[in-house]
Structures are given as structure tokens and as C-alpha cells.
Image 1: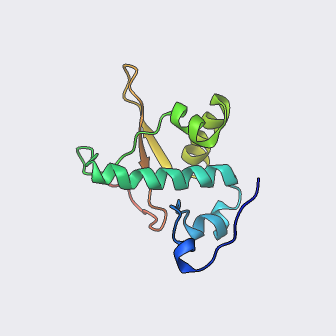
Image 2 (image 1 turned 30 degrees about the horizontal axis):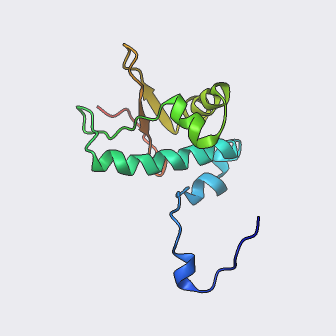
Length: 124
């Protein structure tokens, strides 16, 4: 496989990008978070924008995403066990997401949490 060089500003703007917050990479509180979990968080942030556009809000006006294990497996080219492990890492180890099970075979709602603000009390 052979690739070409970039030849100026127009070439550099041709790609779409996923955004991963710098603090997620450099912050001490995330130093034990796997790179794959950080990448998955970036994918979730991208889906968050689509959820906002589609007006996916719960009764408390909190935006949520739907990102099934199967979708994660497809996006990250990994198996079920790895996808579940990454979701668990983001939820239980780092606290970057919260999942709400819907039951009846429906996918869980995933809330991507803002880590730029630390809550000192529980929201109502």
C-alpha cells in the first residue's frame, strides 16, 4: 500500500475527526484508564452530538446515547468480552459514563458525563 503526502491546508482539512479531550490523555486522574477506553469515550462524545440533534433527552432533560455492545464491537473491531470490559471500565473504574438498563431486550441508555465539573452533591 502506498500513500501520498499532504500538500497544503486544503489537503489537511479533508478528514473527519473524533475528538478526545486532552485532559483524558494528560490528566493524572485518568492515567490508569486504558487507551482503548479513552478512544471509546471519544466515540461516545461523537454520538452525543447526534443524540442532541435527534433530541434524545430523558425526563430530566439529560442527553443520552444508545451505543450497543454490537456497535462497539463493529467500531473497535473487537469481541464481545472486550467491548463489555471497556464499557465497564468507563462506568465503574473511571466514572465517565452511567448506564440505565431499559429491559425487555431494549439497549441500555448511556449517559456520557462531564468530567470538567466535579459534583459535590447529588443532582436532583
